Length: 135
Image (cartoon, rainbow, N blue to C red; front, side, top):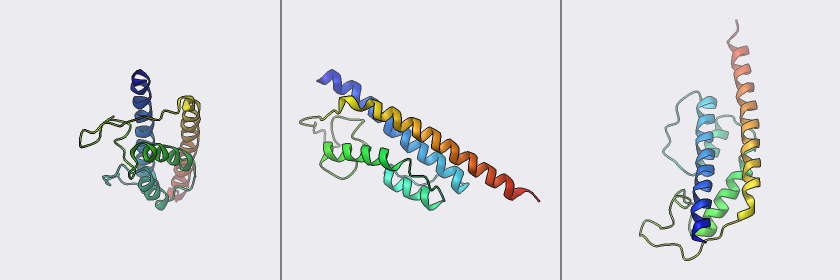
């Protein structure tokens, strides 16, 4: 089981980090400013992005999936630290770890959808900005 956890947690950490960085990347395009909010909450980041005009719901299911795993494992509020560490800030180790082993195909689908729809959104935004800048 330990070997399994050492494979699962890094993969999930990378996926979670990918989603966080993609949200911040899109925010910079839609807001036309650098992202200066020091937040790791995926829900908060998505809310900020939608406030700036991103209307696609491609992030809703992946974020709900990630946050549900964080809550199950932590029995606390959402924590971006869960996938990085098997111990909490007080150096207390998880008593058990629930690993949904057959869900990596779901994650691949999430990533493919996110890439497709975010690229489509960036293209639309670029075209809109190009048309608005013409005399």
